[in-house]
Length: 618
Image (cartoon, rainbow, N blue to C red; front, side, top):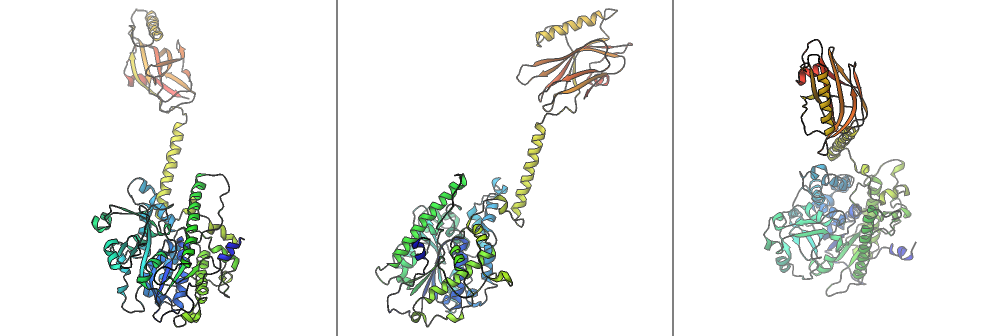
């Protein structure tokens, strides 16, 4: 293991000048980093510890990014419940746990790319569905104004000021959503907030909290940016920074630690200490072995983004630790996910703690093993980080003995011991791409997709079956005419055959007339499909006889092609013909003499000819 990696796992103590004590009216800032649902669950453990030891009620300002924003908005919205509940086995904490188990990403993409949207009945993008689920399942569709601190009357339960960070893709500046609306260019060091609000605040506090959290967690390689226009937020252009549109994406693109607002506004906010819950660490190693496919190309792009983000993260930490600008410097405590702890009967084994930081950062379903490990590990790291601060500085505010470790999915029996075994490590560190693993039969789009899939399979099978050569089922005479001995548009050899047939018919008559001998052309219906070789029997009723030439006619090129099949004469019983492989649209042509015996009359009517002559496919 590299030396620098081992060294990085120690917890950075608070950056406090020697001898400086925390004031009696303690003002804490809380920074919740990005990292998908992994960060949400880790931060939940940190919050539980801070609540137990009495520090959560001292928080006056919260800044959050991506997965941290999922928890931060829920925390501030349900602030009183998070503070008053000693047991997190029910209430808002369990809502977050169930949300992490709900397989959010797959539910979003099953709807965003369902057959309904492909048919343009529903034009919502994955990001709009993300906003919808945030609002419906976590924030009760409440607006940003519901996060206002003044809604709590008692000082202890007064909500902190929340800033949900996002990045403007067009200008590259940091923005934030708060109970006042949307702040633009948060990196501006102007400490006169009233003056800055006139210039850089769009008062869109009536927009849903889910919109802000979706913008903060819209990871660029998976979700498109949140698209805002003055029309969508119900404002005029001059009330929306004078812009026609904005594209807001993951706040971690700019600051994945959520510490920049504290650095810039420390003089105005006057936070004595900032607790930075850091779950943004990326994996030290990524496996890309094998053939370079399109999927590997996407993984390569994501890995490149992670490496660049991790470098920015390390540079930001170094700068903050050395920060000594004008005014009071920022004092902060790092609570990193990559730290290891050794708290008896609480911490998971050290080798398994090192795996926690490698858990995937997406919005897929998290199993109970990962949820338990992240929440408990967050509590342990927070306990170790806070207690490493000089006890004299927090002795009036910290009640360490009140901490009651919480296992969100604690069970009795052999499985009660917290473990993150290597057998589950691969599952927790790789993103699913198998289509079947994304299915949930509790989700209605799967039934729609299954129905569409079955229809496509049936249509494909029918098309395949229809394309197979098949014997004609219904072969019959559909057109009868008496051919002439004058020149016609037929081929010359067919015309010559017709003249010869007429002469033979005349010579067959004793009286020299041809009244009971007809020179006929009979055409069958066209073949509906390609046909294999098949036998054909031509049958006549008693007292009728046929001398004929049978042709297979193909007329798909604009010029008919005649293939002679059989020439018959005399008075056969049935006439048997072998028809070769043929194509759809081909038909049979029977040209010859039909004679009636015993004074019977012939007719060129199709129905009457069919009563005399029948075709039977063998």
